[in-house]
Image (cartoon, helix red, strand yellow):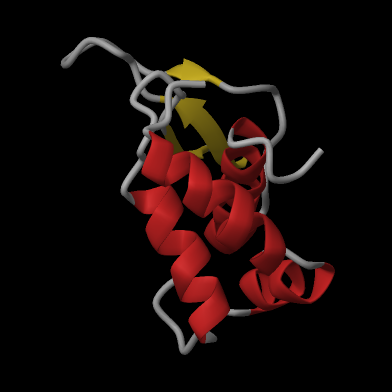
Length: 110
């Protein structure tokens, strides 16, 4: 992982402490643009700014059989690649799956 000293400190001392089963339940229940707790906003802000450019970036695509999570290509204009065969019935469920992937990428969840 390629994090700055500051981002490593934030990840280890703030983000890890904020990610609890209750926070994950809140993230699952609330739409991304809905009202969120300060803790959830802090975790999402950390993940959205993507402090480690070496980690994959994800996107949600609508497919004929639901929503799929894909990895964005590292080269602009190249097609995304599927990140597993899972399909989700709603966009909200797929976005929650992206959140869990990002937390695992940052070694906040096991």
